[in-house]
Image 1 (cartoon, one colour):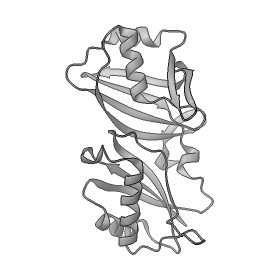
Image 2 (cartoon, one colour; image 1 turned 135 degrees about the horizontal axis):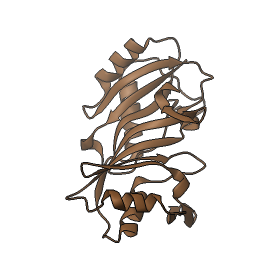
Image 3 (cartoon, rainbow, N blue to C red; image 1 turned 90 degrees about the vertical axis):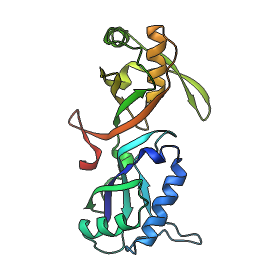
Length: 220
């Protein structure tokens, strides 16, 4: 069996990279005495996976991971043991058992919701957002492992709102295409003719897709 777990990576850990987060979770799983499943071979490792890495500096309120288990464990027991072993700024929110054949979170992931919190006063207005979304295309340059690539952000933006000086958006996040909130913010500022703004990124929710509609990844 496998356990699908939802956890929070708090603000104090926002500058901890993905590999360090993985190591922290692996150490907690070992300390928990749960019947964790390991890979075979000369260098066995815990069979676990995260839905998507968080950008350095970002906070994750409902991150999703999957842990393979040797034997049956109730969600309550898994939650109790792992919560006791986790550091204070990684908080387990919920978990549920799934079959081994259940698709991994990364394969089901399609998009994510974010809150972008500009440092200081937000210079963007609702008129700026309307003009931005009204464009036929939103060209941008994305950095990849092989270099820079020109992309169109327009089809990757599913929601874009401004509320109380904060930007809320739903953006594609999958293997086929993805839009980072930092890139979106830079393009927004450029479109509005204002200087680029520094901001804190909070990933609110990871999303899967079913019948053309988004649903929380943890429920997929």
